[in-house]
Image (cartoon, rainbow, N blue to C red; front, side, top):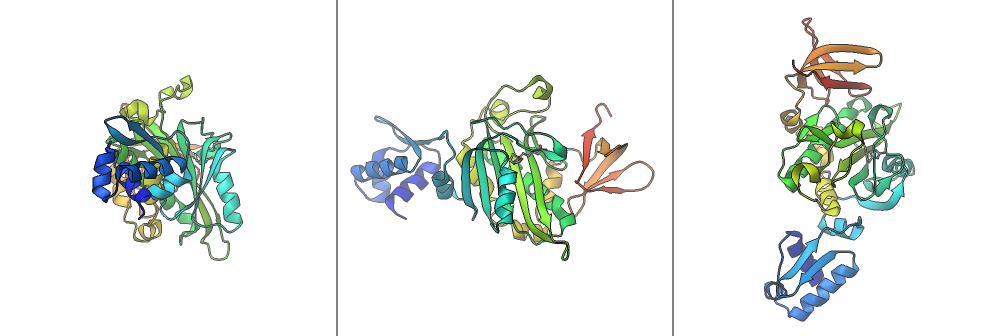
Length: 319
Ligand code: BTN
């Protein structure tokens, strides 16, 4: 590692460090430290300096490939946009052209997509909107595993970054303080002959920064800053999330994350209303199966397995 990288690693810990302390730690002069900091700034890092105090790495407002790469990108090459229609659509385009382990990020999306044809509001500067192109050795019908994996990765990142407990609403929503802070949309292309994925795109939208919520969403959606008081750095949050995808293939093969999913899945043990097309029925959510399916007991002695496709569940209040 050169001095610039050493200084960056030291500052990534979040502490304020004096030029003198850094110089001593790395056995160089204070002026060498100052030059390394200057180079970091030119690379897009927001290093604040206070007289008689030291250097501190501050949240940089913009998304920065340099910062994410340096902090750790989980083996993804990054494509960053100020504005796209949908990062999932752009990622699918790249996947169709042969890309693998690419992550598309955008400051805002004009047509952010949610599950079941819903919109995902994606105003600038407010959230993290990213889509990862993967080529998992998974059968198409096991797509829910990717979503459940991503939900655990987001929940763990939220907890590591803010200290707040994150819960999961089957199948794809991450909640903090009883409201949704993140949605996940997994799309892909399945090879008809093999039944396996040609590619999968995992799209993740996290509401990071405090913002005004439209009245129709205010009771169900929130952002991490409002709930936890922590103003998370988008680049460092992205890095922490992508690093959890470094080993996604092994985790999918071993299903090692499903217990972490079950532990956070707050619908388990609750009475829910299930919506599937025009059908609607009540059941008790019992477990999450080995393919990410929700196992529900409708009360007639049977156990039904809900695949994530076009199904949604709502916890029944007061039951
Ligand atoms: C949902 O809540 O139903 C899923 C929301 C998924 C939103 C993310 S934001 C990044 C990616 N691009 C999209 O258009 N959607 C996903």
